[in-house]
Amino acid sequence: MQNFLFFLIIIVLCQHLIASERRCRCLSSNSSCWPNASVWQTFNESINGQLIFPKPSTAICNSNSPNVNACITAIENWSNPFWRSEQAGAMQRSVPMLAVNATLQLVNRYNLRLVIKTTGHDFLGRSTANGALFLWLHHMKNLTFINNMLSSQYNLIAIGGAASTVGASGGHGPLTRWKVLTADQVIEYDIIMADGSRQTVNSCQNVDLFWALRGGDAETFAVVLSITLRTYPSPCMISSNHFLNPPNNASYASFVHHFVQLLPILADSDWAGYFYLTIKTFTLAFFPPNGDNDIANTTIYQLLNNFTQPAYYSFPKFIDFFVTVMESSSPTVADTFLQFKDQNGSLLIGHLVVGGKVSDTTQNNSINPAWGTALLHMIYARSWNDGTSIEDQEKLAKLVTEKLEILQTIAGGSLSGSYMNEADPNEKDWQ
Image 1 (cartoon, rainbow, N blue to C red):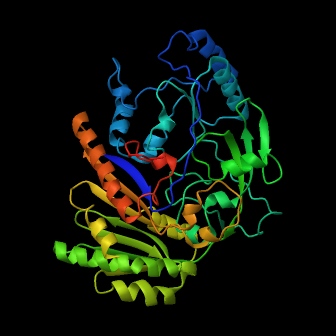
Image 2 (cartoon, rainbow, N blue to C red):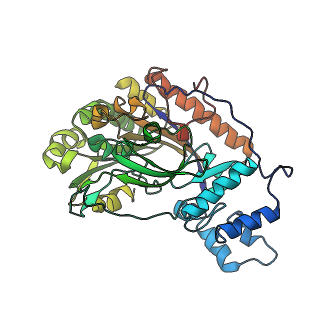
Image 3 (cartoon, helix red, strand yellow):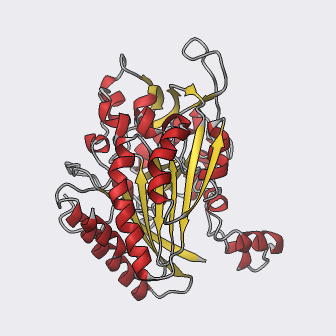
């Protein structure tokens, strides 16, 4: 299996965060404050036996009496992110409101560190903190249509993330340039506060929390039980896919320069999409607005036809597009991009999902306004094989930081940044 080190840089204005003093939490390594076995037993009974003490996924292979079938399953799925996301933390199965309330009471009583995990990812590891009580909301899944708020049709979509590991209320995807970010679509939250009280949060009640929850990713404000989202009729989608496997570096460089010149044209024409740059290949998946084939023919097709073997697909419904496409797969800027293809295991991912309608929103929320003014959202990743030494992993981490500094130069230094859960902890002067 290859392990990936992901860090993000968005070509945007920096978000300034104000640090606040924090009280040290009690961790499981501190027996003087950590609850004893009797406390955990009583707590487990109060939440109907949903508490577990997690073990490594492959521990079943190393025990004195290993479970052979379970061990085989773990080994076969070791590199499967969907299987790994199903492995529980300190809670398992669905978590009712009672369990959430009881958990918060226990946390407050013993000053425990609490980690709340629903979906998504955090490259800094805050969602899998060692020594903490882990509140796992992974199976709190239910969908209800509210007819008096929405169209009576059920051929509807909610604006969400392109990655299927991101829940309904988070992420960015190909529709965000046309319908703005998911945080702008939230009408109401049902939450539980740190004191265990249940609150309704919307534009009329708990207005400060309504502002903070819609975009504020630096802190945990509450446990969100449910959200109410706007939905839209499912659009027709056209996917313009291009794959380049150039015979030499000169051809590769020529295409990258050509593509970078095309990016502002695509952005001004309301295109959305993704590109992936590796040591040998360049892959594009781009989508014209409103499934307009004429726009596709007059922009990306004419400009890229000499370089790539294109493939065009039309989907009458967004869900068909998502399953088929999203689930399967300036000269100075161009020269900078080319510096990221010099080694095996390198991957540069570009997202044309910012700007567009995001810049037109008048919503009063905590989203960094740079999401509306940026051209690209970029991720650089390096991979390593199982068994790679800690020393070599640290060298790769240092290389990632150095590469991000290169991206910062073309973004204007202080005009670049990232959002908290995809930041590089080794970035210099990150403030």
